[in-house]
Length: 206
Image 1 (cartoon, rainbow, N blue to C red):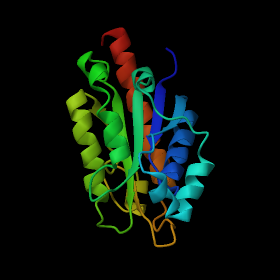
Image 2 (cartoon, rainbow, N blue to C red):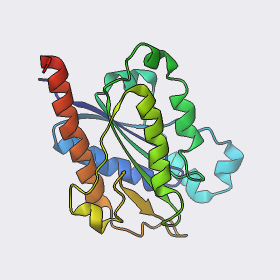
Image 3 (cartoon, rainbow, N blue to C red):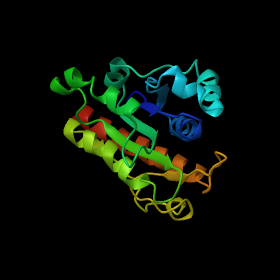
Protein backbone atom coordinates (compact mmCIF):
# COMPACT_ATOMS: atom_id res chain seq x y z
CA UNK A 1 0.00 0.00 0.00
CA UNK A 2 1.03 3.64 -0.40
CA UNK A 3 2.53 5.52 2.53
CA UNK A 4 0.15 6.90 5.11
CA UNK A 5 -0.44 10.61 4.53
CA UNK A 6 -0.10 12.75 7.66
CA UNK A 7 -0.81 16.45 8.05
CA UNK A 8 0.97 18.03 11.02
CA UNK A 9 -0.97 21.24 11.63
CA UNK A 10 -0.07 23.84 14.22
CA UNK A 11 -0.72 27.32 15.49
CA UNK A 12 2.12 29.12 17.23
CA UNK A 13 2.57 32.75 18.16
CA UNK A 14 6.16 32.60 19.42
CA UNK A 15 7.41 29.18 18.33
CA UNK A 16 6.62 26.55 20.95
CA UNK A 17 4.00 24.63 19.00
CA UNK A 18 5.99 25.07 15.82
CA UNK A 19 8.80 23.17 17.53
CA UNK A 20 6.42 20.44 18.69
CA UNK A 21 5.10 20.17 15.15
CA UNK A 22 8.61 19.86 13.70
CA UNK A 23 9.41 17.02 16.11
CA UNK A 24 6.16 15.30 15.15
CA UNK A 25 6.95 15.68 11.46
CA UNK A 26 10.41 14.18 11.96
CA UNK A 27 9.01 11.16 13.76
CA UNK A 28 6.13 10.60 11.33
CA UNK A 29 8.53 10.65 8.39
CA UNK A 30 10.79 8.20 10.19
CA UNK A 31 7.79 5.85 10.36
CA UNK A 32 7.38 6.11 6.59
CA UNK A 33 4.54 8.63 6.44
CA UNK A 34 4.24 11.24 3.73
CA UNK A 35 4.03 14.43 5.78
CA UNK A 36 2.84 17.97 5.19
CA UNK A 37 3.81 20.54 7.86
CA UNK A 38 1.14 23.22 7.83
CA UNK A 39 0.02 26.16 9.94
CA UNK A 40 -3.39 27.56 10.78
CA UNK A 41 -3.93 30.98 9.18
CA UNK A 42 -3.17 33.90 11.49
CA UNK A 43 -6.20 35.99 12.46
CA UNK A 44 -4.60 38.44 14.88
CA UNK A 45 -4.21 42.03 13.65
CA UNK A 46 -0.76 43.47 13.01
CA UNK A 47 -1.13 45.73 16.04
CA UNK A 48 -1.40 42.71 18.33
CA UNK A 49 1.49 40.88 16.64
CA UNK A 50 3.71 43.96 16.74
CA UNK A 51 3.04 44.40 20.47
CA UNK A 52 5.20 41.32 21.11
CA UNK A 53 8.59 41.30 19.33
CA UNK A 54 8.86 37.51 19.71
CA UNK A 55 5.48 37.08 18.01
CA UNK A 56 6.46 39.29 15.07
CA UNK A 57 9.82 37.51 14.77
CA UNK A 58 8.13 34.12 14.65
CA UNK A 59 5.62 35.26 12.03
CA UNK A 60 8.49 36.42 9.84
CA UNK A 61 10.57 33.28 10.46
CA UNK A 62 7.72 30.97 9.40
CA UNK A 63 6.27 32.99 6.54
CA UNK A 64 7.17 30.22 4.09
CA UNK A 65 5.31 27.49 5.99
CA UNK A 66 2.13 26.77 3.99
CA UNK A 67 -1.26 27.48 5.52
CA UNK A 68 -3.58 24.51 5.87
CA UNK A 69 -6.45 24.26 3.38
CA UNK A 70 -9.52 22.03 3.08
CA UNK A 71 -7.68 20.15 0.32
CA UNK A 72 -4.99 19.21 2.85
CA UNK A 73 -7.65 17.88 5.20
CA UNK A 74 -9.13 15.70 2.50
CA UNK A 75 -5.68 14.51 1.38
CA UNK A 76 -4.46 13.33 4.77
CA UNK A 77 -5.20 9.99 6.39
CA UNK A 78 -4.15 11.35 9.77
CA UNK A 79 -3.77 14.67 11.53
CA UNK A 80 -1.47 15.75 14.33
CA UNK A 81 -2.51 19.10 15.78
CA UNK A 82 -0.36 21.27 18.03
CA UNK A 83 -1.93 24.40 19.51
CA UNK A 84 -1.46 26.62 22.56
CA UNK A 85 -4.11 26.97 25.23
CA UNK A 86 -6.32 30.03 25.04
CA UNK A 87 -8.27 30.22 28.29
CA UNK A 88 -8.47 26.44 28.40
CA UNK A 89 -9.62 25.83 24.82
CA UNK A 90 -8.12 25.77 21.34
CA UNK A 91 -7.10 29.12 19.82
CA UNK A 92 -9.45 31.02 17.54
CA UNK A 93 -7.14 30.45 14.58
CA UNK A 94 -7.75 26.69 14.77
CA UNK A 95 -11.44 26.95 15.57
CA UNK A 96 -12.12 29.35 12.70
CA UNK A 97 -10.49 26.97 10.25
CA UNK A 98 -12.44 23.99 11.60
CA UNK A 99 -15.63 26.01 11.11
CA UNK A 100 -14.93 26.25 7.37
CA UNK A 101 -14.94 22.47 6.93
CA UNK A 102 -18.69 21.92 6.96
CA UNK A 103 -18.68 20.94 3.30
CA UNK A 104 -16.12 18.17 3.79
CA UNK A 105 -17.89 17.02 6.93
CA UNK A 106 -21.25 16.86 5.14
CA UNK A 107 -19.68 14.66 2.45
CA UNK A 108 -18.24 12.31 5.06
CA UNK A 109 -14.70 13.18 4.03
CA UNK A 110 -13.48 13.83 7.58
CA UNK A 111 -14.71 10.51 8.93
CA UNK A 112 -12.20 7.80 9.88
CA UNK A 113 -9.28 10.22 9.90
CA UNK A 114 -6.81 9.34 12.65
CA UNK A 115 -6.20 12.29 14.96
CA UNK A 116 -3.91 13.22 17.84
CA UNK A 117 -3.29 16.59 19.51
CA UNK A 118 -0.66 18.42 21.56
CA UNK A 119 -0.63 21.70 23.45
CA UNK A 120 1.21 24.22 25.62
CA UNK A 121 0.43 26.75 28.33
CA UNK A 122 2.32 29.12 30.60
CA UNK A 123 1.73 27.03 33.71
CA UNK A 124 1.01 23.32 34.38
CA UNK A 125 -2.65 23.96 35.20
CA UNK A 126 -3.26 26.60 32.57
CA UNK A 127 -5.61 24.48 30.50
CA UNK A 128 -3.20 22.08 28.80
CA UNK A 129 -5.43 19.01 29.11
CA UNK A 130 -8.65 20.93 28.52
CA UNK A 131 -7.25 22.46 25.34
CA UNK A 132 -6.43 19.06 23.87
CA UNK A 133 -9.86 17.75 24.82
CA UNK A 134 -11.47 20.77 23.14
CA UNK A 135 -9.73 19.80 19.91
CA UNK A 136 -10.98 16.23 20.28
CA UNK A 137 -14.58 17.40 20.79
CA UNK A 138 -14.62 18.63 17.20
CA UNK A 139 -13.00 15.41 16.01
CA UNK A 140 -15.75 13.30 17.59
CA UNK A 141 -18.31 15.22 15.53
CA UNK A 142 -16.33 14.44 12.40
CA UNK A 143 -16.32 10.73 13.12
CA UNK A 144 -12.54 10.83 13.31
CA UNK A 145 -10.56 8.27 15.32
CA UNK A 146 -8.79 9.89 18.25
CA UNK A 147 -5.43 8.35 19.16
CA UNK A 148 -4.22 9.62 22.51
CA UNK A 149 -0.78 8.58 23.77
CA UNK A 150 -2.14 7.40 27.10
CA UNK A 151 0.60 5.76 29.13
CA UNK A 152 1.75 3.45 26.37
CA UNK A 153 5.35 4.64 26.58
CA UNK A 154 7.67 5.68 29.39
CA UNK A 155 8.07 9.11 27.80
CA UNK A 156 4.58 10.03 29.02
CA UNK A 157 5.77 9.83 32.61
CA UNK A 158 8.92 11.88 32.07
CA UNK A 159 7.26 14.66 30.07
CA UNK A 160 4.51 15.72 32.46
CA UNK A 161 2.13 12.76 32.39
CA UNK A 162 -0.64 14.08 30.15
CA UNK A 163 -2.43 11.01 28.74
CA UNK A 164 -4.57 12.97 26.27
CA UNK A 165 -1.63 14.36 24.30
CA UNK A 166 1.81 15.75 24.92
CA UNK A 167 1.77 19.20 26.50
CA UNK A 168 4.49 21.50 27.72
CA UNK A 169 4.78 24.37 30.18
CA UNK A 170 6.47 27.56 28.96
CA UNK A 171 8.24 29.99 31.29
CA UNK A 172 8.19 33.77 31.01
CA UNK A 173 11.23 33.69 28.75
CA UNK A 174 9.61 31.27 26.31
CA UNK A 175 11.58 28.22 27.42
CA UNK A 176 10.09 24.75 27.68
CA UNK A 177 10.03 23.54 31.30
CA UNK A 178 9.52 19.83 30.62
CA UNK A 179 11.57 17.76 28.21
CA UNK A 180 8.87 16.64 25.79
CA UNK A 181 10.77 15.88 22.58
CA UNK A 182 10.66 12.11 23.02
CA UNK A 183 7.00 12.18 24.06
CA UNK A 184 6.10 14.17 20.96
CA UNK A 185 7.97 11.76 18.72
CA UNK A 186 6.37 8.76 20.41
CA UNK A 187 2.91 10.29 20.00
CA UNK A 188 3.54 10.89 16.30
CA UNK A 189 4.83 7.33 15.89
CA UNK A 190 1.72 5.95 17.58
CA UNK A 191 -0.53 8.09 15.39
CA UNK A 192 1.10 6.88 12.17
CA UNK A 193 1.11 3.27 13.34
CA UNK A 194 -2.62 3.34 14.07
CA UNK A 195 -3.30 5.21 10.83
CA UNK A 196 -1.51 2.48 8.87
CA UNK A 197 -3.74 -0.14 10.46
CA UNK A 198 -6.92 1.85 9.82
CA UNK A 199 -6.04 2.68 6.22
CA UNK A 200 -5.04 -0.91 5.49
CA UNK A 201 -8.26 -2.20 7.00
CA UNK A 202 -10.40 0.23 5.01
CA UNK A 203 -8.60 -0.68 1.78
CA UNK A 204 -8.94 -4.43 2.28
CA UNK A 205 -12.39 -4.32 3.84
CA UNK A 206 -11.18 -6.15 6.97
